[in-house]
Image (cartoon, rainbow, N blue to C red; front, top):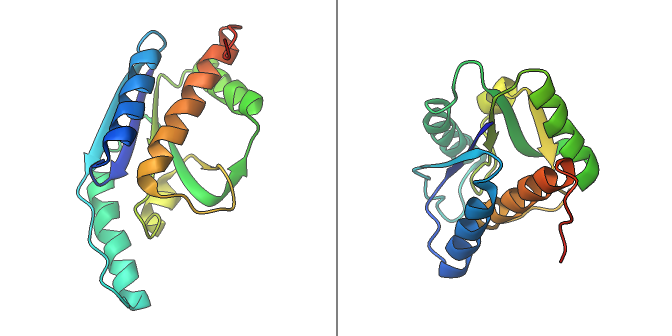
Length: 159
């Protein structure tokens, strides 16, 4: 299975890069993982709603260039479906059984995802009604993908 994570911005914090590297290494036995970073837009202080929409649209255009035809696209969105880890694992397993060999997860920038990206998504996933920094969300997502593969392989996760 091929899994892409598409997200705006570079990870600057060493501890987050280390965590991403660790989960990427762990996932290498289960899938081919690619992390695609697109340029993010700086949000000015006291931005207007129109400016916010323009920023989301620009980031969305950059994200859209990396969405592959035939890939199953999962957008991370607050209004998406919330699942327990076991149900998320079952969802990934079900996708694989039904021929989805390429899954692309999309994480929005600090303002969220453009409406066009949300409309393109095959499914919207929410980790919580809370808002998380998009850099930290990469780590959380990778951990849950790894946990899902371990669950589906009937392997213990905690040692």
